[in-house]
Image 1 (cartoon, rainbow, N blue to C red):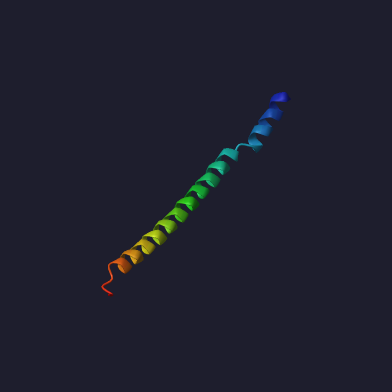
Image 2 (tube, helix red, strand yellow):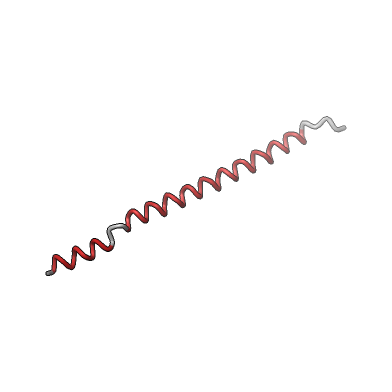
Length: 58
């Protein structure tokens, strides 16, 4: 009887590791996307600054 109760508890928490992996993977992808957006934004801003510096305006 005791073995049966342990098996029922183990079955109810069996998918917890998979859920944690999915959540962490989703958060990692989200962070990488945000970093990509920041990289794009700063490269664009840097390009604008270089265009202003290289301007031929007297």
